[in-house]
Length: 399
Ligand SMILES: *Cc1c(COP(=O)(O)O)cnc(C)c1O
Image (cartoon, rainbow, N blue to C red; front, side, top):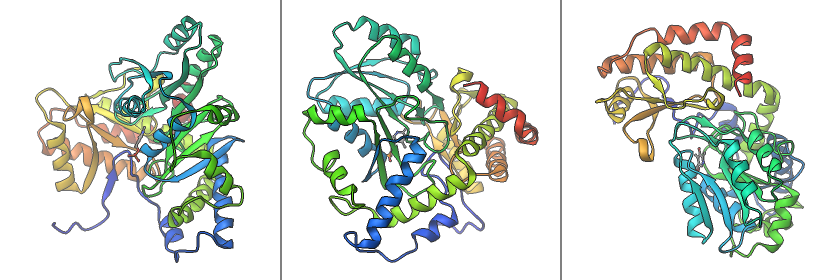
């Protein structure tokens, strides 16, 4: 490996950059997870996370990657053969659907083009037609990290209500929590799945299930087998700040700091900052004459922008150049769009100059790789960042 002076630009849409404050908070001796100091930490983070999910329900923290959170949501609420409604909005919805199938659920997986999110009217139609209430859950990925499409969770909730359907509503907020507006209680989401390594600015290693009363009630009759992921064992020990098995103690120190940082900035400001950086990134993409994979402005992601490569140009060869020449890591195309797109992650611990550095790296990389484009993307982004309040308001209105 050759030496790279200066700071590496980690601009994949997770894991994201871990701020120094969080690194320092985790630089602590490992502690007894059955002792009184741990109980305080456990209670602090379990309580603190409710404010991030905006729920008065219960938050469960697993030592796991985000994918474990998917499995936990399923095995704790459903029974073998249960019918669930899912939408192919991108790679992460495809993977969550695979987990559901492997657990023997009967998944209605509505095909998609990876450029649009869930149409709330389609949800309403399917649920209205389901007179016998065969669907036990509607499962949607809030922000599709593979293509930069953000599903309109509030609208989908309204569609479920309009159909007067009792299905559980479960969402994957791994790449939207602490970057995109998310109001679990107000939107009546029954299970929110998330992870530590995206908006929460932590290293990978924690998964979350934030659960409503209705989900807890479903848990008492759900017959899928579960052991490690069992909510009841967690809730029992969590009451005193403890866990049924060894929690990721060091990461929990970091989580406590992350919660404090998010409240210092203010959750509304965190959301506005992300939508402003996303708007500036889209301005750059447009000025380059390149195409955003997401097509509907109401669904533009605040955490990641996915860009189509011009035909005949390999996105992975381009990413290799930005990494080698500028020490900039960009996100790869996943699944169906491998090699056809690259992704700019703009979430987590991120500011205007980090975005300008990232976009400069992309523009220089396009030039170095001989990818046809117009220059001026960086300037266009700079213009957007100079009018902060206007852009933030527009980005929020576009939802
Ligand atoms: C990153 C991500 C996941 C998967 O998380 P892992 O920690 O890699 O298991 C799931 N869903 C979405 C939307 C993601 O962005």
